[in-house]
Amino acid sequence: MKPVARTFLIAFLIAFLSLLALPAGASAKHKPVDYITRGNAKYEKGDFDGALADYDRAIANNPKSAVAYDNRGNAKDGKGDLDGALADYDRSIAINPKDSKAYSNRSGTKYKQGDFDGAIADCDRAIAINPKNGDAYSNRGLARKSKGDLEGAIADCDRAIAINPKNDHAYNTRGIAK
Image 1 (cartoon, rainbow, N blue to C red):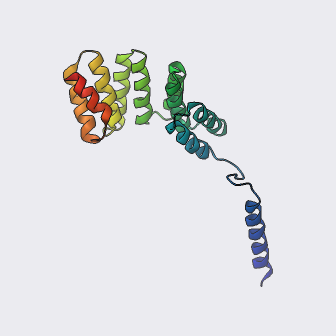
Image 2: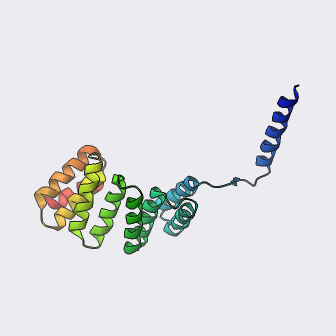
Image 3: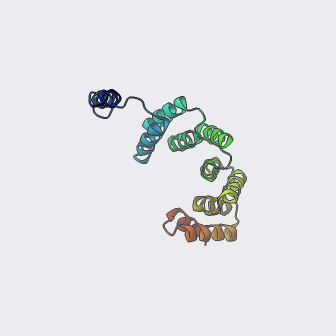
């Protein structure tokens, strides 16, 4: 075996054996995406505090992660911290103003605060960026219903359902509007 090949083989074996020495589930270094993925899993289970801790770590590792701010906004909204959620959505949008999902998420929080016009404006922006964002149509339908624009609400919910026939939120809002 040539000296260069032997050196490469030895380096490879050392690296491989060092990975085997790590405890189960550990890695040499977590990437921000690892924290986001883990935070998303916790969020889906309703563990908002655990999700927040992971999103905080992702942001600490990459303060320009629009996705981490957007997801942390979702977790804060889930906990009822609507002002904190809005601040995180604002930060996400400042980093990536072309993220339709962040506008749609922020619209839901604005709706919860009773800012129906702000919610509609965010949905309009989300739809302008991505006309196939069914959640934006559904959210706008809800805000329009709350403002008394029942025809607009029904039309938005029809569009949301056409995009995603499993959008139960849109069916519910449309039914109430009808």
